Length: 154
Image 1 (cartoon, rainbow, N blue to C red):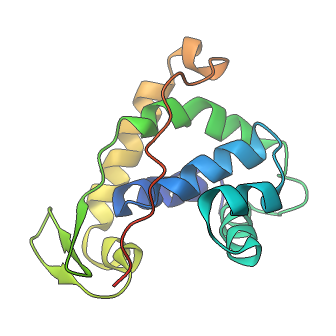
Image 2 (spheres, rainbow, N blue to C red):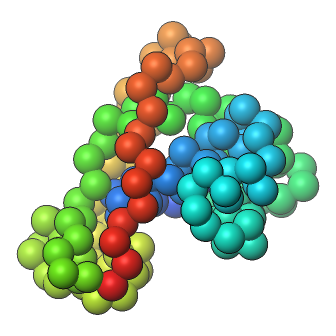
């Protein structure tokens, strides 16, 4: 567990098309917005949103100690780069289609990415780290936000 696991979770969220989770995490850990406010904005329950944020914090280690430390710095560095990564799933008639292998996924795209495309996720994670090592990205606020549309649920 560490920043690597947290980064891979962020990459999986982006590749699966859950851009609103990535944007909500950035707004929570970096911009210090409240979960209730974000839940209203992204039209999810507060408990679901807090669960996503806690999963991200726990992937990095302890939730309390990492609230403003590692996760905030990680998101500040990789968020602009993750904004440029394209999702690999398209939703058609309530079914997700993976553009990497062409399989139709009825349940969670995240589970499919973990099972079938672990190497690709790690490859994108290495790419994100490589691009985010640019010192100008560490203190820069992203100009362009990710489209915060939620994927069509099956």
